[in-house]
Length: 299
Length: 260
Ligand SMILES: Nc1ncnc2c1ncn2[C@@H]1O[C@H](COP(=O)(O)OP(=O)(O)O)[C@@H](O)[C@H]1O
Ligand SMILES: [Mg+2]
Image (cartoon, rainbow over all chains, first blue to last red; front, side, top):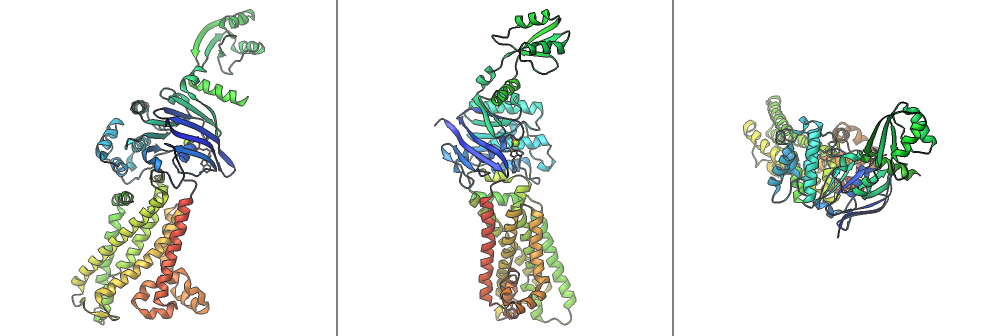
């Protein structure tokens, strides 16, 4: 068995709204998979279905080769999750939360370990009602991880975390993945996951529009040429007239490839009487390649 | 299942109300014992004083309210705090989760009974030293009369509680379910005159669930039959039937809820 999760043909609607439209993808054991898409795309809905929290109209979900349904899901024993926002009892301390859910012989040492790893020692004995958003979020993550699950599902876990906590979490995820834990992590910002994910699943309006190893998605990155000219508007117009794809932004940005070379572009612009003040090269960041994917899909 | 019950009890043990409400109950039992004694100092017979003990100095009524509170929060708070997701996504089935909550309430109910009985015995010794356990009331010894009253109250509690649990799963809102519980329980006593008249007019009305709330008193004093128009046995059976129906509807709603 190399897939820890297999989803196929998943459909789900809320009233008239189609939330999931024939969703299917697999997750390999030990991988970190990023589930990326804009708000309302259906990320949380997929995760809830995987966890047996919501019923679906059709389709199949298997965790460790066992079917998941809302009333029967023993396979979730080794799954830890944080969905949407952390569920917290205001009258209990952080530590009491962890004690409530920690199981097994190593419960106490597991609690100590995760508290230390997420740097929560200072406030773990305080009642959760006094926690800030970020503290609650960390507690939610700690609850998902405390039992050292084999498969961890985190829904927008970076929400509310400061940059330092964000970094801490990434490092922890990478460390645990190296030790064999599988992760499914959602985000509406691709770059947040780009640094750690092995595979990326892109979802938009309930449909999976890309599902590939991160390298392939980053490979889709093309070199961008960014120009500063004496008349950017005119430059864009001329390039468009000559069938170059130009981004509608303040600067003049063109994607470089075999056909589109810097030399050709410069010649064209200079011949049209436009002075070039500056030329920059840039690798398209992940967001741009995602945009590319979204656009390709629309055609 | 034991793990689940332990977790429920753990959560409850961390709630302040778990300690405050029983303390308030004990205070009210004290006040009741003192007030009744002062008011009735003059003309009361030993039997009247014994009847107060059988009612555990109003403690039984308070237990119903404590259980309404416990029952209306045990499910709805999980929705209100967003903890329902953590509760449901584990290896356990929804059936196990819900049954563990029922069992937890049962354990709480028994604890509250034990507490009120102990406090009442204590109050009896302080304020009513002349009331003795071997006195007889309605052909029962004082202690067994009290136990019968507790059992009757247990049935009443669970009629209200099963209704509260049903409302909880349907509306996910503790304010709604606590109000329904109190109105239902309180309404029974307020409406009892009206209900008696209505039952005389429309005989089938005697089967309505409010009438079953008299089961506690009828177990005590069989002459209540005049008012309820039901034999004690029919009332006990009908009470169980209502409890099962309410619990089953709540169970079904909880199990089949498709969106959390
Ligand atoms: N309980 C619900 N009732 C009605 N609509 C819902 C419900 N949950 C989600 N939706 C809708 O389903 C779509 C997907 O939601 P969601 O999975 O939460 O998106 P994401 O997590 O990607 O932001 C959204 O349009 C949302 O409005
Ligand atoms: Mg979401």
